[in-house]
Structure formats: C-alpha cells, structure tokens
Length: 423
Length: 166
Ligand code: SF4
Image (cartoon, rainbow over all chains, first blue to last red; front, side):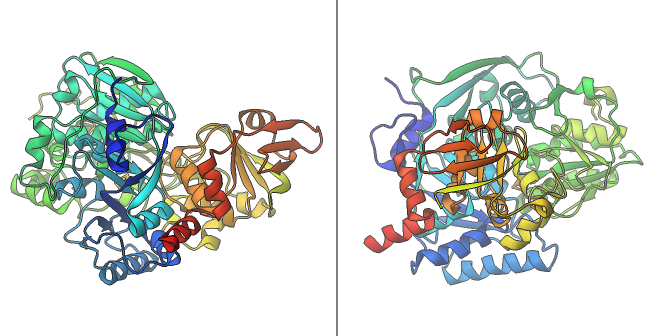
C-alpha cells in the first residue's frame, strides 16, 4: 500500500520507513520560524527549559515583520527582545528592516525552506512552504521554544484530502481563485486536522508564486499542511537558491486518502470572499458594485512579483478612484527592488497608490492602513474575520490582485474584464 | 484541580483567534493586559463580566485562524477555568495543551449547555455534569501521550525533564 506525500515527509523526519494517519511521532525539524509576535513568547519559554544553546543556529529563522518598521514603543521592545536573543545565540537568519520581508515570502526566496523537509513556524501561514513539497505547519510559541531547544517536535500524522484541479484557468484568474473556491467548498473546518494535497493539470500550469498563494491559505480550511509535489518549475525556482541539499518526496498514486475532490477550473470566475469568513466565497460578479474605501495589494498571500505584475497590468495608465485609498506592499525587499526595476512602482505611484516598504501592516490590522468603523476594504490578503483590518465594525473582502487593482480603479468591486482592454 | 465547577459563557461555531484576542493588542505578551481584551470583538464587555472559574462553551472549530498563543494565554489569564467545544482548531488545541489551559472536546455538552448554566467538570474522567439538571456529558479522552504532557504541566516542563535526563 502506498504512502501519501504527507506520510512520506513525516516518516523521513521521524526516521521511520512508514507512518500512518493518527500515529503520534517525534520528528526532526529542518527549520523553525518565529516572528515579532510569536518569538517574544517563545524566547521567554525557551529560558525556562534550561539549555545553554539552540539546537542549530543555522536552522532557526526569526523575522520581525508584523509590526515593523516598529509601529510603537511596545512593538519596538518586542523586536529588541528578538534581536538580543538572535545575537546571544548566534541565530544566522535574523533579518532587520531594510533586509527583511514578510516571513512566508522571504524564507522561500532565500532558499531556506526546501522539498522533503519538515518545517515549523510559530505562525499559522507556515503552511505556505507546502508549495515547495515541504511538510510545513504552524504551531504556537511554546512549540517553537521546544523546537529551538531540541530540534524536535511531536506530531500526529494527518490523513490527506486530495484536491485535483482540472481544465485550463481562464485569463485574470490565479492561484488565489483556486484556493478561495476550494475553501468555499470545504468550509473553514472542512480540512481540519488533514493535510491538503493540490494536484492536477491546473496546478502544474501555475507558476511558483501562484502555488505559494494556494498553499498559504490551506490553514483557512483548517488544514495542517497544503502540499504540492515538486516538479520542473520547483527545481527551476530552487536553482541557485537552495541553501542545503534536499530530497524530493512525492506521494504514491495508490496511497489511501480521506477524500478526493475534482474541481474543473475552466469555467471559474474570479472568486471573492465576503465578510466575515474566508469560506464565504462568491464569484466576483455577484458582489460587483460593493463600494470600497480601501484596497490592499500585498501580504504573504499575494505580495510576490507575479502579483504586482498582475496589478500593474491593470493599473497602467489608469487612476485609483478618488474615494479609494490603494496600498501596495511588496512582500520582500527583493520583490520591491525588482518591481522598481520593471517600472511597476512607477505605474502604482502614477495611479496614485501608496507604496510601502515590506510589512504585514494592515493584513492583521497591525498598523499602516487600519480601517475605521463602517469602512470597507478589498484585500489580496488571507483573512477577513471581524476586526481583522481594524475596527470591529469594518469589513474586508478578499480577492486576487487583478480584481483588487481593477476594483481600486472602479471604486467598487468589479470583474477586471469590465474595465475594458487590460493595457 | 481536576474537579471544578463554574458558570458558562456560550459562543458559536468558528470562534477565531482575532475574536479571542485582536491583533491590535499583540504588541505585548503580558498575560494581564491580554486578559483585559479577551473576546473583545465578540463581546466588548466580556472580560468585565467574568468571574474566576467561569467556563467557555463553544461550537465547532474553536480557535481557528492564527497561531497566536496569546489566545489561550488571554483566556487563561482572564480566569477561565476550561474551554469546552464540539471541536477545536488544530493549532489552538496544541497551544492550549502546551500552556496548560484545560480544554475538552464534547459535542453533546456543546449542544446542550446554555449561557448561565452551571456545570461541574472532572478533567481526569472527562465528564461534564449539569449542576441543576444532573445530566452528564462525556468528553473525548486525550491520547496517552497528551495525558503525559498535561500531567507534566505542559510542554516546557515535559521538555525540561527530557533535556535533563539526557
Ligand atoms: S502578511 Fe498577514 S497573514 Fe501573512 S504573516 Fe503577515 S500578518 Fe500573517
């Protein structure tokens, strides 16, 4: 009997030939991640364990990205704690403002997360790295503390739900639409405790940036991981980037799974999640006309280069609606710089968008772009819970970058094709 | 403290971590400060109404969303003795056990109990007893490994023992 990709990845890390769903294992961690919200709690817990050093200073990444550049004194104190911990224990992968990026865009870009690995992060969107064929999952700060001390953590092996995406994706749609549609079908707990596996011709056709977007939102269906088997595109992405040797592991075709769903993408419209759940998903046309105050393009979901290119293709030669504030936040310094070279930033600024240094910022209602009571935003981010971007009486809709850009111009939610020929 | 009793505050399905502790308060990890804002966006008066030992009862997928351990920390620091739900989101479940916030997965209790009810909870037996009606609801038992973690007083104590032993 075959093994799923999730099972093979966890078996390798546990030093076992095979594992079965439900089994509790102790797995070696290839990389452990923390940020400026979760690391300070982990650092306090780490001190209680009573070890002299971290398990491996090269295999811990501490990324201050949520409230940075520091939004206030309290945030500055948290980052200071991280910085001092990083110095004291010789943590190699600590990145300051000016060198950093939103963690889940930054780590793949730096070649720090690789196929075949088991990665934990004290951040729920750690599942992003599943797009590279790694078993990557979010944990809490105490788990991070234990992993930093021992390089190991306990896991329960999840069953797998396979989503097979067939057909050809229509223009102006991307990974975001596939994952939103899937979450709409599964519900916010439809994959609770399971590993999601994304496969099929429409996944093979996606570039890496679109795949990261999909794996990023696996948690929004409650999944423990969102896996995509590595292929030639993965290898090309890792060329000259990977910091360690790695082993590609793929699942067996005959491996038993909990469920398998087929999704034909060829007739999909761009998808939009309405408040207050990422599973409250509708085709864009049924929400068309929803008046907007703010549009945000960025985050670990859709702040990568392909996302900015898609937005720029629509904003070129156009202007943001006078009522709307458009924020564009490249996810990393490298994305920012490349967007500058390609003239994308020029297009955004000419369209009267505010372009910011990389930060999580408004995505979690942290800083820079907080909504007032009654305000409505459309964002390329991943969550639209009550109060996610500011006042509990504000609202957030979620979409892909093309829909976000077009809607910023229209002043209301719109299908990008309604704007006319994309210039 | 394996047996305790308290008054119930009832919540629905899919209570997310942004509702439990909004991100705007995450520039601190001080438990007392977090406790003040516990459940604020779901019910702004919540932390003021609580008495120590109260119990949260919720529907399915409690604690979905972010991995912030500030969520179970806020609940624990607010004086909530235990959270009973039909089911928990995976990371919240892990975090609660790791920090020693008692949680119970009990579908029947989640359905039958109402706000203001008083119950007695026996954590070891996994039993929830309605103090007026006398009805007893059973919780899903923890696997042995997790019982070990709970008995050790959470993950850090468990790891500390392990590290010392090697
Ligand atoms: S961009 Fe948003 S979802 Fe991603 S890590 Fe930052 S706060 Fe979390």
